[in-house]
Image (cartoon, rainbow, N blue to C red; front, side):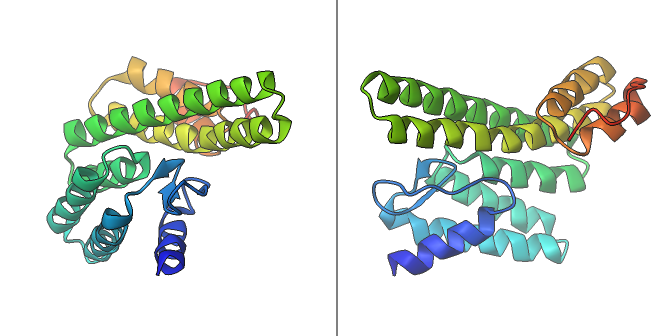
Length: 194
């Protein structure tokens, strides 16, 4: 049963983060799910995705919110709820969820870096490399979060904030950020993001 739940969670979040093995076998983005909540979280996320696909955005937001209530440290769920709010033209709500996504991912990156440094000091080179790789992989998710937040700021007429976030996304090699900066921020350099 644990394998089936873990597989479902990996599939659901593959587009945003690299899943890692947690102490209880359930984790996404380095956040271990409680065994008792993993199935419920998975069911809420699947339900939200189905509802979003049929444009029942209110129902999708309710399910994403229920998943967040069960496990509030998973940035991917905030990102998806923010995307859904964006589709409903709830720009302040989307911005709030994107802010939380950025906050959580940045904290996870710092946590992995600290663990990697401690493991290196303790001469656990393999453990150090694993944590530092995890921090690096999270930067892709962070780039997407900055891109999304920068995009929604454009709709709230916060051009300076939008361009600042898009620049951070570009620095994190988000492939969509450069075009958005050219289109919305007067950015001239083409080919910087890889």
